[in-house]
Length: 306
Image 1 (cartoon, rainbow, N blue to C red):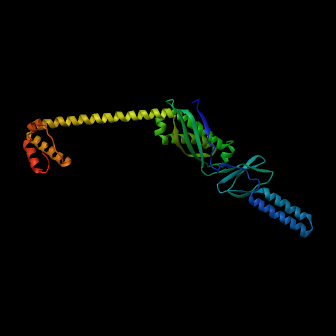
Image 2 (cartoon, rainbow, N blue to C red):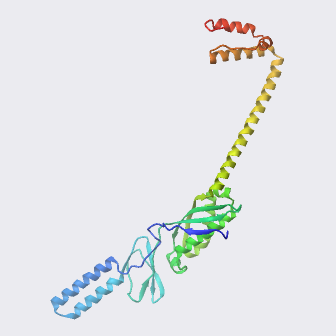
Image 3 (tube, one colour):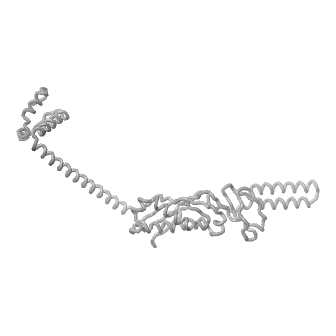
């Protein structure tokens, strides 16, 4: 397992579970501009600077105090470094300078692609395994306060669990039992991520890659196994046929009439299907009494050559 290397695929979805903190929101910007215009108008109409200063400071306050979180987002508010609660979704306000916001947490289902490269199975076969992890944040407070970067934590936990699971299974199990392997990974990740306020919905094994030379050897082995099974089936069929013939010979030996009827049926089937001359050995004619039968067949087909 020490030779295994792990890499995170960089093509994650655009809807990242963490978004940057808003410095100025659109409603805050609109209110700030509105109060700025009001301050300018008050200074022009009242010819006094005091109302303009009040309106200007109010607009500046609202510019940085009004925040907006989307329906699927939440963030933590820290007042002088101390956690006071979660905010969102919707519009909320903070006290500038005194309050600070954490990054916004997306509570929708997130998808991570994880790849284990050159990991060794329990039967020492190097494989590359691609997996997909579906997870979501159900407790934003724990995700923000209990772990420094929960996205990286989930990804690294998935990597470790994937490596451990690969090392405990053989190659045939990983190829044939992907669903059970995914459920095992989900159980391991649930135990680790529950304290972070994160739930793992499912883990799916997309593909298991093996070296080309090993794949070719496995293909030859499978072909040889199929040929062996075909030979066994053919030999079994030959044995059963020989047993049936032996039983039939015993029946015909004690019942010449049955043998004659069988011979007539064989001759009839040959003439009907082939529609051509039928050559029967003289020994068979004498043994089964086919002389009369052949004459009858010739009379029944006068147009055919004798």
